[in-house]
Amino acid sequence: MTPVELSRTVRRAVRRAVDSGELSVAVPERVVVTPPRPGGCGDYASNVALQLARPAGQPALRVAHVLRGHLLRADGIDDVSVTGPGFLNISLRGGDTHAAVLVERILRSGAAYGCVDHGGVEVGGSASTSHVVHLRAACEVRAVVVADVLARLLRAQGAAVSTSCAGEPSAAWGDVFGARLDSHGASTVPPGTDTVTVTVRPVPAPADPLPLGRDAGRWALLLPAGRDRPRISADPHLLQRESNPLFRVRYAHARTRALTRNAADLGFHAEPGGLSGAEAEALLGLLADYPRILGRAAGLRAPDVLARHLVGVADAVTPFLAGVLPVGEEKPSAAHRARLALAEAAGTVLAGGLSLLGIDAPDHL
Image 1 (tube, rainbow, N blue to C red):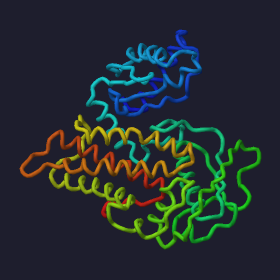
Image 2: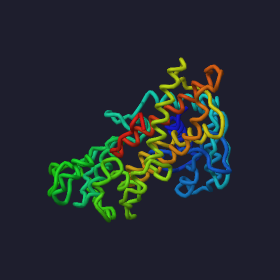
Image 3: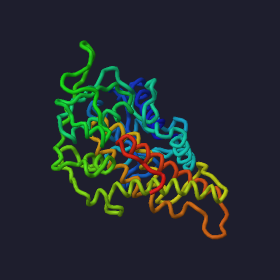
Image 4: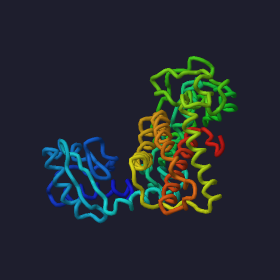
């Protein structure tokens, strides 16, 4: 069971509790499940009971135990524990299976993992909306780049998007950064369209980022939160060292691709399967959380949320990669194939995330 499927299962449990009269609340449109935090247990956790407690007029612990009863009857769930003030900690049936299913889904979906297809069907993201989101950027390089990325993120979540700039943007912003908006001046959205207008006005760049080039320049503008001033300098954005977060992300991606080539030379390929160890669990948690991160970055109009998550994935996958390939005379085993599949899944997420930020993910670095 994938995180998206589990989210739907928990939502159905809420629906059953409402239908049976045990809870009197509006069923939420979406339920968030995440890897358990310190002190938790199981494969995933949800705070839905705490969210429903006030509207239900019941203590969160009571709500959690009601939902637990319905979840225990759901296919694919082995056990549910209630911890703290009312957190649901869910253990899936077949602990190794959920890892294999998640990895297989990422590899099958490719860059579309976490996005919504053109029919509005979830591939790990949120459902599409019927209105048009109009992004109106201030006439400043950072605002234009942020608007360009927000349009990518919103479209990846199934939204219809239009963009414009308050003035005429510099041609260099498009030539160097590839940031092009639909129009400048007045909006091109047809009159009568159901439109939500969002003004994009982050703290301006303190210096011209064009000398950094496309990839480093975009990263420098996107990594800080919109309320923070970006750092525009060659150090650290152009340095090929660990102090540069962009380098770590691209290096981690390139290493996953190198492992695929090396494995082919050794005569084996990736095959999702059971995984164990703290490093694998930490990485799986970050990959499972990626669809939620895309939805959060789009919803908050905050591409820095995605950029920081990619740094977390890169920092988690790098120590894991050392144990992927056989050593010495060791023969490739099912464990090696499963670890290679997880490494490839991490590379897929890194490449997909960088693409949404408008940044290249080279196979060689």
